[in-house]
Image 1 (cartoon, rainbow, N blue to C red):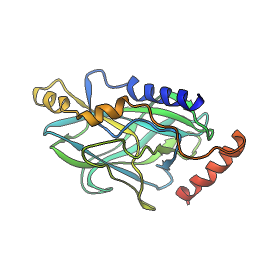
Image 2: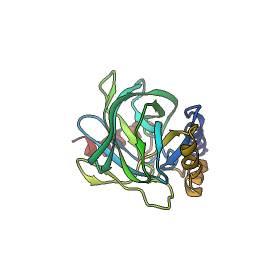
Image 3: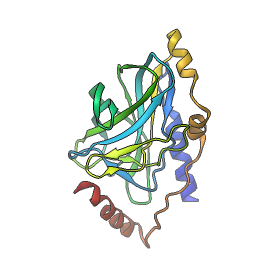
Image 4: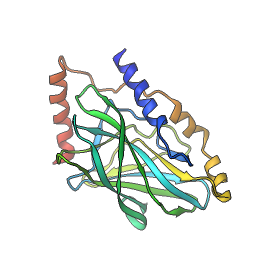
Length: 230
């Protein structure tokens, strides 16, 4: 029952907040919150692929699912959009601020939060791009982790990597674009059925077997995350 309730709350986090004048143009699947997460500070960079179906798509914001230690609030992170994994042509590279909402404590003692950011992004032609996150900042200086969800289901399989280890499972995020302009309306309306399904699907509980107590679960998970920090 606890796992089901966590999944339902995380689903509401994914759907609850989006720019009022924008529409989803890409979703990398719903928040998982139970399985794993990848460091996006201390010099680590996580990159995920995404695609747009038509030209003239002006990105205006994004939401991410992040794992934070209790009491932490994500202030900012460096967000970039490139033509390849953290490289190639750069279309956007800025430090963006976040508003945090819908935090839920997971089985390992972390808060899984929806992080919302709005920005004046690039106008992208149809094709595949890479979204990169790094230099995440919290006042405490603690690590910040990007939720792993393996990318949901897409017509084009998502790719993801971390600069220290190479290929990894994909992370949860959603991109928004301004849809008031005529040419953007067609692009925004082309959200695929598979992406819409991903947004409305309650995630399955994580596959890690819980240990006998909450304290032991936190201890075990910290050990699992250490491989991503060092």
